Image 1: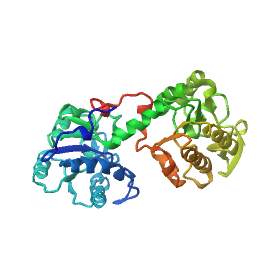
Image 2 (image 1 turned 120 degrees about the vertical axis):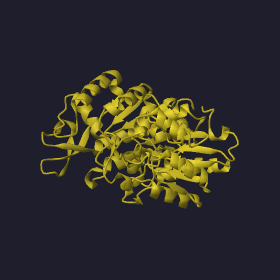
Image 3 (image 1 turned 90 degrees about the vertical axis):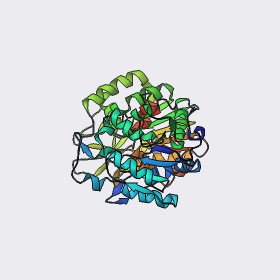
Image 4 (image 1 turned 45 degrees about the horizontal axis):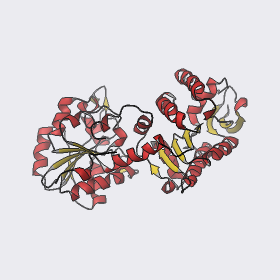
Length: 393
């Protein structure tokens, strides 16, 4: 699938490689809450070091800009420094962290550095990053001889370090990016039956995915806020549940297109007017109810459908899983998908909240591929543009 990978790169002894990673990990102050994305980047880093390269690592972290201007305190709260320190621990070697946004100064410091792993500060401290500014991309490219993209999770974005930079350097795919594309592609050419499980909120962010995979799928199982819009589109009362008019209109069109392939909840757990969890059949939801989880009959039906699958794709929680009262549907289905993935089917899971829910089951190791991406996974599977993959795939 890829012709331009790290293994295809020339001898890198004495050469510098700009390595774009996704190190956008959750922080509590300066403490890293979860380092899965950092660990996922290690194979590419080690491979480039084995090739003799000096590596300049760059990543974004959070959203430090509002209308092109830095938020007060962002340079402290969203610095990459603690991530660089964690990288040094995981690699068991010195890592040079270079703060600052003066690229001329950074270029000089990189040339003088004795360390072979150098980490720049948050790319989004530069306004040119989000603007896909060509001048900024050219400046970034001047730091290195080659470019490697191992940040699949932002490869659906028109941003300088994943899009424009490739116009100025020989460009290659990192190991994680290649694995993401290979494994996600299995959902586009699936072993049948294909079962798709979707939750989350708005239909709009997933319409391309639902439409494209829906054509190939045996069933598309819908939960979470996503399902509320489809229920409302069919005339069911959804009370105070999360919905929006635009998503309801989209849901109506998708119902016409996919028909009986779509499987909606038949019962739900709601918070009623007293905020207590109550089981309701879908035609019993009241004006003051908020749908926050799928019910036991829905869990049973979803489980039955999942057991038929040879390829299973899951994105989006099926309820408010972070709340003790409304986690059962999401976690039960997560376990069912993990269990089915133990050889009976190819299991593919992605999206930040989805992966967080999966990890709560302690069964993530059974899933064939846990994607580091959320929006990029949706874009790739939905057939949307992927600027970060252009000219390397």
